Amino acid sequence: MNWTLYFLGVGNAAAADSLGSASAVIECDREPLLLIDCGQEALAAYLHAYSGMPLAVFITHVHMDHVAGLERLFFAARFDPQRCGRVRLYVPAALVPYLQARVADYPGVLAEGGSNFWDAFQLIPVTRGFWHRDRWYDVFEVRHHAPGTAFGLRLRGALVYTGDTRPIPEALACHADERELIAHDCALIGNPSHSGLDDLEREYGKDLLGRLLIYHYGSAAEADAIAARGFSVARAGQRVALSTPTAQQTRESF
View (spheres, rainbow, N blue to C red):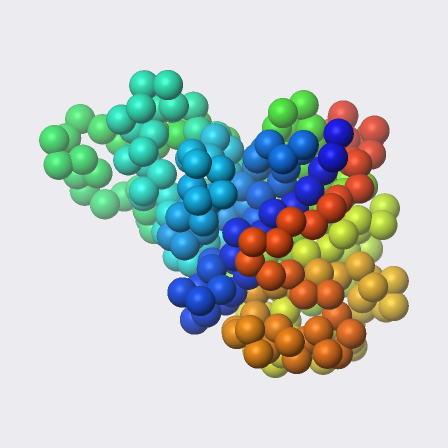
């Protein structure tokens, strides 16, 4: 089996129109297994790449550039008898109230009435992790705006995906200890909610820095400047090889 990570988009909210909403798909033998985040541009890119809608989505946080595509996904699933109620939506439990307020609580989700937003999905609240397609995925808190509002994802031995975050050396010490590729939020200059290059160089040792793959930046020129500093930079439409997940991923992590 060949595991890969396909980047649908790599831009921050301001650059989503040119670089795509930050989002990626975990694949096995080119089959899309799990979509990470579902911004409006990300869902369009998914449709272009796979000629169909996702059947499973993990949400890192509920800023609109990461969840705006869920409304379109609702309509696609709600009127498809084969998919309605079967699209798995893995959401950290702490985010469920925020997601409800952002995308599900608008009165009259259908003009005809008679439908709840969640009727189209199989909503699965998660805490420390979840099972998907016979693999266990770890979920961990990151640093983005308020505590308890953003989360990363780990497929042990293969991938750590931080989502939007400041540096998280204490989390990566626990969740990136098997030589995983680390897809990490970073721009040329950081701010109180996102990492910058200087932040990463200050907070991480050589081992972690050497495994980072940068996404969520502000422009193609910014990506080139980051690469010129010696970092690996993800590009929209890029497919990256992953190591095979470890055998431990057939059971839960504790």
